[in-house]
Length: 628
Image (cartoon, rainbow, N blue to C red; front, side, top):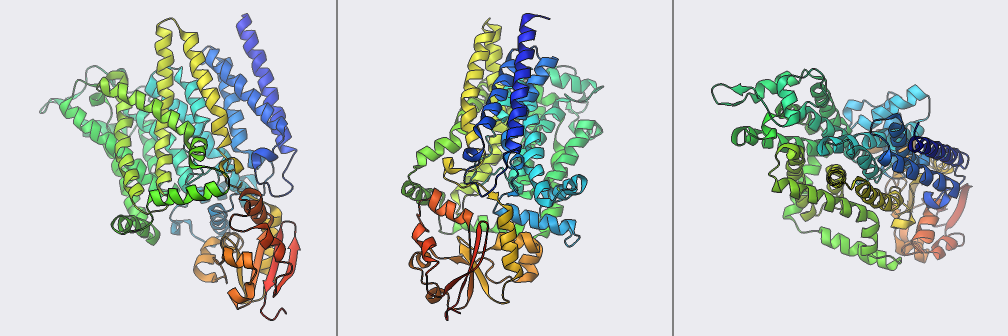
């Protein structure tokens, strides 16, 4: 055993011990109350252990012999450290993670598990069905099962297939550790419209890395052992293609149907169909990418038969299958039709444009001590660097006209065109911040291209006798970006957002308030009614169709909260529920911008307001005009 091998193994041993200590420290320091920031509340020992493991794994992965046991252990260490950060809410014993849409999705999952709701009547039952599966197999509550799916399983898929896709594009094993470090940045997560917690659109976006890898691997036949001659030739980008004797070009239709019998072809069909059930909107984006690649293949076969693209397996059938499943499933739901018509109407009607929304939020940020450039740097700084690297690779490919080794880069470039077009359309509409979903989707191939660009730069340096210098530059760049990316994975005051922590006391407090409420008396709360907790406790489908819960969406206007004139504002009796999370968010994070501390203090003495229920973190008041 050489000295280098011995040092690398000792380093990995130390890194593994550090990661083990970090995981145990996180598990042994569970959250006891609402945490405004999971970063600040997690013990320093955890962060030290994760950093040591990540740094050690990265350095060994870049220096060890590729595909060796030491290299594999280093890659595993980097992945383990990354998943530890992503899965912190689960490790730290959070009752649940995701106070908004996520609670509603758990409400659906609980209904499905209880047999009260048919998943085929849900627009996107994929994440919910997987939650039920994990809950039953592991015998854990749906809240825990849901966090396993969103915080462990799907991020793991992203971490696995981004480096594989980068390696396929760059055509060098050096791309795998580079791709892993880029994947660890989780660039698609922007915490505006793409989130780490349960949010089917976000999970579908992360799963797109798997689908894109399958599409690229299928076209080249890279995964199919015993593949036909044309598949081997397509990997090399040359050679004896089977031609249609009448036209003198590849028989694309026949080869497409034959290749469906391969493992990769069949898996791509199944995965393409499955993404529709995770989130149809993102499935349509995937269909646009596959269709664009198929169009590029079509024209390459007819007008550039000497290029590698013409020898690849076409994606015609896969694109057709995905569109067929999408069209068979999605139009059944009014919500999908409404989203499409709403976007079209927003383009022809006046309303809040993207610029107006940004301007409004910029003003709010200034009030709480932040600025738009600062927030942009925190949320999108890493994405900007990756976009520049990807653009450089696309530019080189365009200069070479996407020949031979640049063929797969050409596919990704073609796939980006329609999605960027839709992004610009949505950006021009007044569809809220929906365009950030498209930004997150686009960042998946951008991350892959960025990793491939860095790997090719490293290879270029190695070919000129500067392999160590090239590796050092790549490692320093990615390790420098890592803290910026990690700090923006979970929402926190760092990005002017509260964490999505939901405590057991909060769930129980709302449950008790619902159980002992007086019939007909409406509820209210800050920034909206208790609808997410209603969805969780009663089931989302029931809450939205048959329950008619009083005050489901009703919120307290900021002016009423400041003035304390509840009886004048409401008239009818009203339950007012305030939580520790409300106070920490409004006072601790936003400094009382809309709901000041004085409003919380005045509740105890406000006319007609009585404190009727108190528990850890949840207080229930009743507003009655007669002060009864």
